[in-house]
Amino acid sequence: MISPIEFKSSRHICRGRLYEPKPKAANGAGVVLAHGLGGTMDCGLFDYAQAFAEAGFHALVFDYRGFGESDGAPRQFICVPRQLEDWRHAIHFLRSHGNVDADRIGLWGISFSGGHVMHLAHGDAKIRGVVAQVPMIDPVLSAHVGNYQRGGAATQALMKAIVHRFKTRWFRSQAKMLQIAPGKASQPAVIGSAEAKAYIKLAGKTWKNELHPDSFLKGAFESNNASLLTDEMTTPMVLQIGDIDKVVSNEATHNFARRCGPLARLTSYRGDHFTLLQDNGERRAAIAEAIGFYEAKLIL
Image 1 (cartoon, one colour):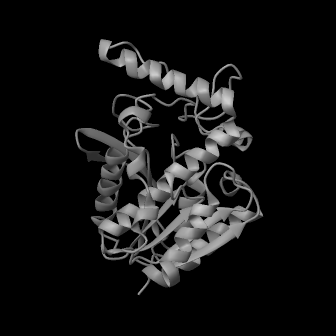
Image 2 (cartoon, helix red, strand yellow; image 1 turned 90 degrees about the horizontal axis):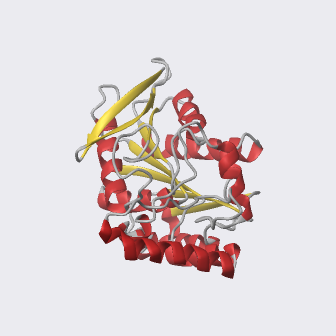
């Protein structure tokens, strides 16, 4: 059963979907899912939530404030502390469900939210397991990867747009949105790698290829650095990477897994940053691995 849900985060209403398993299949555990940079839940996450529900888990997938079906302004604005707050309210919502054991919750994040779920698990000892798919573990190294893939001219154009916003936002001028993925050739894209064109093809109806430039000015991207947590992590995790990913730094993910030791299992899949969101054998394998991990860590 799929039910639309909503919960309040700060003064905003976040909306999502709750995928519930058949009563006889329910195992009492729950998984919370949310997308990465600029993503909405209809960009490939429904299939994951459905698969988790079919395996017996209650799966809650949601949009951050300012994105997709959720309320909030400014629209298309990423702020790490606000998104983490949205996550915490989503987790609380699922924990409050009558058929879910509040002590058996797992998290699933992708790309930028792969960093979110590490910070959430670090701050919440009751989180029993984390799956981070193509995670942005180190935003600084990933930014270097992005600059290289985007090229010098396009990177300078992107920085020029951000600087222009910095100079004019005090005058209450309307922000000129940035492209998330390469679409219009005349505009630089935040995700500069050519593989990001797949983002546009797999996107749902609520997704917009736009990012508010203030995200880079006051979104606290640098705080979403999971590599700083390696010595303090206690939550078991699965890290799923694409072997030809050119959006995030796989080197950072490998190093993170090595430093976390037996807590982390790293699996490399054939494909790029967006392969595991598409209908193929690699995605089916990634889903099966996640289900097996949640069954081992969340089911008593």
